[in-house]
Length: 345
Image 1: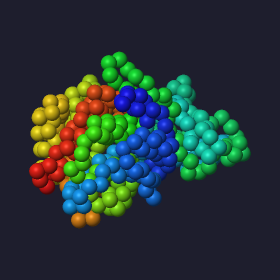
Image 2: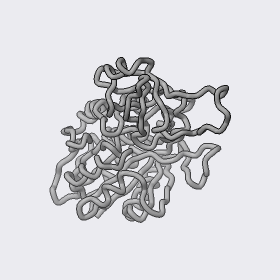
Image 3: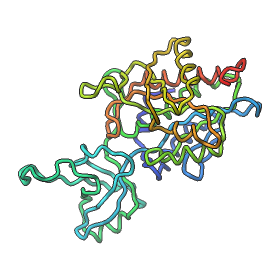
């Protein structure tokens, strides 16, 4: 599979939290070769890859398919739009940024308003909250009401692209990079005989609370799970102790809410398979779908593998193709190990 192209294609489609249909449509097309695909009532995408002995472990591989964005809250008398954040958008980058609204009538382009520096005294808010800002789509209120509606969602407009080396950047790679890593794992596993039951979940609404993973995991009722997400990659302006390194492999999570046995097994498998890896240690919750899945029903043995990413929650999120593929290799190694000779129990 062409990992880089899938990353670029996934980044290009819109799928803001709670309105993931376009991204789910692409995800379904990519998952179809590997199993039976269906959409969950909460908008998540499910693929049952293997069904074997009901007494065997049932592994859930999860990555969220939604992205951050904005939601229209009000149309002003002069046609400007008031919006709220739909997920944790970095508001430092919003002023004068281009935006595209995913409206019923088709895409509507606009720009976040920005007061020229010549007209400011320095006392104004330099970093206003999202709901204190306006979006200009270039028309009157009457014209705006014909094209957009409160509740419509939008995202910053920034085409995905490749950088030098093996890096890709674009919007929504948090967490479409995780979806791509799972697809890479499935490609590696397609000739394997199943030793466990396997379901893939591309979950909705992670950016607004993880409801997609929580409800789908409740239905699936897995014995084991691995959540695949992104985490911080180091840049010169970021604290090294809180970051991994781009290009140095997946980050295996350790946290009280995670299964320590799974975390250690992932590290051991990475060493056995000569897969570069890093560790990420958290003192409480992980801030990912792992928190939701681990506490589903009577509890699920859950691990977390994260892909290093620069510039999180911006339209220029950056990942290494090698990191995505090595994450897929590690997931495939774990799937092969689960159920063999009682491993993973």
